[in-house]
Length: 128
Image (cartoon, rainbow, N blue to C red; front, side, top):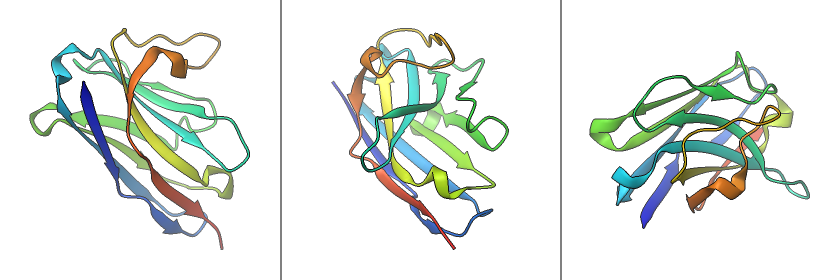
């Protein structure tokens, strides 16, 4: 089992930036793909970005591409999500997740069903 803990959320004005962190512990060697998801009140959970645990190509939802950057520091077992040019519609609870499967994007998204470990989330609020 892998434990995931997110941090870095907060309140910012439109156009601002935040960097989220996700620190993993446990049997991390067995996970092949890490991802960020978000869920706004009353809405479904949406995939945001994904990265292979061994590094390589990064993947983004169309709504965040060009504004968000996913990265990882394997020495620290930590994944990051740098969020720039934030918009009010980015307001949500952000969760990191780990998958036993390789990163796979189908119809422009990664399926949450492929992720087996989830963090509790960190709240991001964007408003003026």
